[in-house]
Image (cartoon, rainbow, N blue to C red; front, side, top):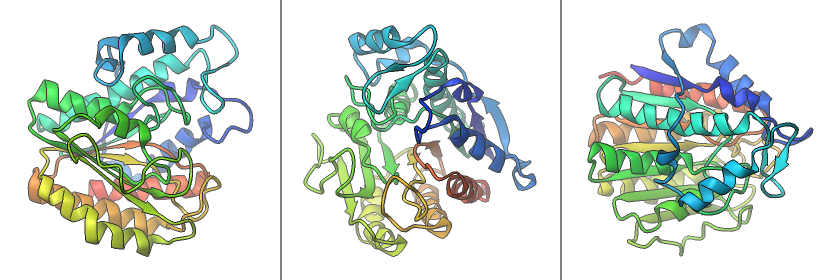
Length: 310
């Protein structure tokens, strides 16, 4: 069965008026996944991560700094794009805890796969830097949790957000047990993600896509490079950073995907998971800023997860 991990605390993480990473994003995804066709999902509320879990991705000095930025009222800016409100700390720790709980459920056989509906996102948070709406490197922490606490030999993170997952790459750069694959528009924020960036152990594969390219370009990149690399790696678990801002309607970028493309990439990743790791997939929400496109794309993504049997 498919587990849906929900983070209502994400609705208490407030950003300034007009900010694209807003409460309504999570509300739109939650509403889409409340439709009758998702009644058979198993649901749980994301638990709070212990602060010690954050050390899987960040040094203590950084964790202490982020905690010190949390305001008692109003908002605080961690950088020009990344903001905090009084509810942000809990929202972020439940995002990390929810992703770790999803890993636990999938690796212990309580779920075949899982989707974590959460905000703030995480894939831009580097080891010692909050940026791009992100405080903690949620998926990278979950990947290292799978390695350290479940004894896995290899994991893979696949990030199809339109922006390069520089934070995930930074945290996992010197982790030889983790493969990081990212498709993303280039040039675009944050400016990283060149094909020449290969990781400390040749464990990074970047698939940059030119502005204006459509889902066919993404499919070719994965068919010719990404899927083969993932099969060769043969991970014990596949984690997905599921950003839906490569959609043609998204205001922050210039790729031209539609819902069928998100269904295709999800299906392809699940097929490989079926081949190499018993179908074990944990997906976590990253970007997506046009609300109807986000809701529709997240729905087809979770439907592909849900339709897996075994």
